[in-house]
Length: 248
Image 1 (tube, helix red, strand yellow):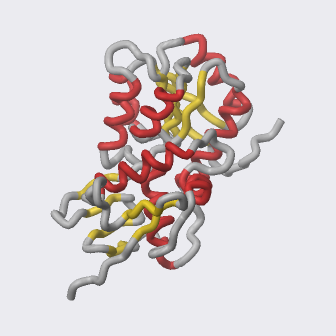
Image 2: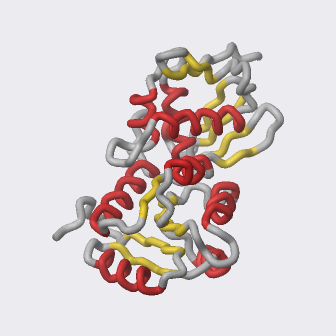
């Protein structure tokens, strides 16, 4: 069976899971689809491997010896050099609250054990497509910096510079969501529209994941969540980005 997303270069996946059997079986399966999987058992080994080479995707188990998966995920999302790497949480904990915490911490997707390996292959391809979108306009060129509401967004590094000149890295989902608002200013976007843009139709999605992403963006934009002046909630409809006049 061929991969759905053929590529001239192999996809590099880093699996962080203390179950050696899963690492061995998954590595052999992913190899069939042109995906090289390197397995490590804990956070220390993950950091060591990242220092050698950054992977295309990280599969991160939640329950790990020592530093747990959520702590490692937060490290990845706050480290500028790693913040753009897509992360798929891979865990036996499938409760709704666990998914919310994983997404809130910056995960791009969430797969519950036991899982169908073929589904995991599809999800790997999906997060890669979402993290490397095709340019749709000159606004998306790699060296473009977008200025809005006295803030600056670097489309190449996916970093946001606030009004206090603080540089904040954005996760893949946060960047996609912010770009969706910037490209459609002063226009109400429904949760369904935002889910399609931010997470992709093939991923497990639910309305609250968008609410969480909007909440995270408001924090990073310094937009008061109690009385937001920028990312406004339109009751019963969705959200809207209000652009302010630029001072000269």
